[in-house]
Amino acid sequence: MPRKTTVDRLIRGRIKQGNETKRNKKEVRVKRAEKAVEARKLRSGRTSFTQAIIEQKMKESSTQTTINNLIDASYCIGRYFTTNLVKTIKKKESNFATFIQDKNGLYCTNIQQVITKRVQRLFDNEMLKYSNDQICIVLSGDKGGDQLANTSKFGFFISTNVAPNSYRNFSFLSCWKGDDGRNNQEIWLKNILQQINSINIVKLINGTVFKIEW
View 1 (spheres, one colour):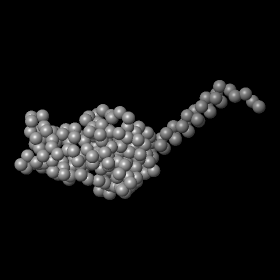
View 2 (cartoon, rainbow, N blue to C red):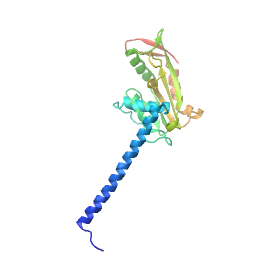
View 3 (cartoon, helix red, strand yellow):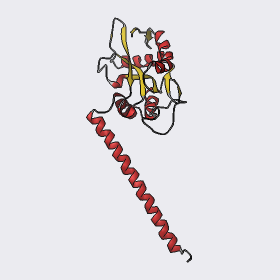
View 4 (spheres, helix red, strand yellow):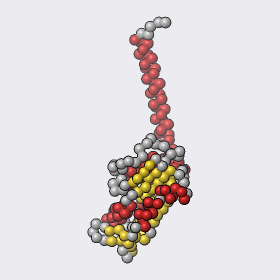
């Protein structure tokens, strides 16, 4: 068998490098195509309520710090508790919210503080809607659809003067892998509801106190 010369090795190396470059370019094209499809779906309004939250909040909150002890696995949708949803919660709520989580979901442990911070921001920006020192907070749940199937979310909206039902005003309190059946609600909402039952007022920095209508 003839010995491989330096030229042979160079040729084989360049062929191998060329094949790797082709594979890399193909992967890039596939990723770009996937992103283009998602962008078209978002623009056409066919994405779910939750997907819209994810896309918007990941853009708005890219510089915020992360929450310790949250899921940090590879990106996946559908079969597992969706990681990009968790990343959204990290970025959107991480400056004042704390969570307890495991591989199947998470829930907020300091709802009073979260509500106070949200109300304070709205009040400071003259967006808070109130009457007779009373504000309205609406609890809302959402079972994932489309690409986020098999996940359920729970949170709240604070009544505002501008687009009160916009997903931009939604605050996460809990989300988990699975449906919104009774068993899952007992697991993921028990602590949430116990906290909410004890929250009747919110006090702002200037001393203003608002009663909460749930």
